[in-house]
Length: 128
Image 1 (cartoon, rainbow, N blue to C red):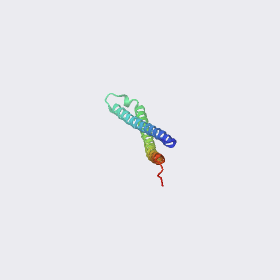
Image 2 (tube, rainbow, N blue to C red; image 1 turned 180 degrees about the vertical axis):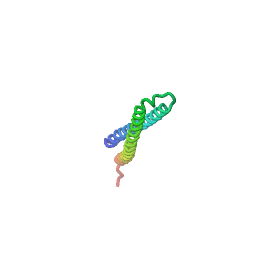
Image 3 (cartoon, rainbow, N blue to C red; image 1 turned 90 degrees about the vertical axis):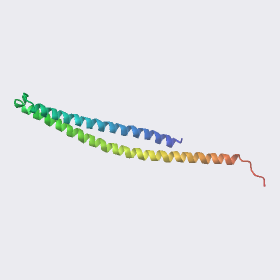
Image 4 (cartoon, one colour; image 1 turned 120 degrees about the vertical axis):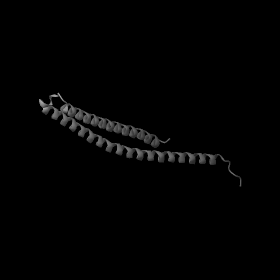
């Protein structure tokens, strides 16, 4: 392989890792949003449960629900940002993949031409 193909292959591997990183971060933010939503639901259930201290400290319950809801919204926004980064990384990955394929074909073409030239140079000259 040529130096260009080697470099492009390394860039391709790096782009794949970057895409995986963004996918992982997106999944983490989505999971955290789900956990925050579940926490808000649990606090609401505790607020409505019989025998809870919600009548004594309603502001604590409301503050916790608001905090969990805000955390959910923030995590969803972060997940959206990461999804955009995943899309960009996918596009870059596809572009680099095409360049690697082009470079490999050029390397193969060059090797074939070199082999043909060597084969022609080994043939004895025809007498006239």
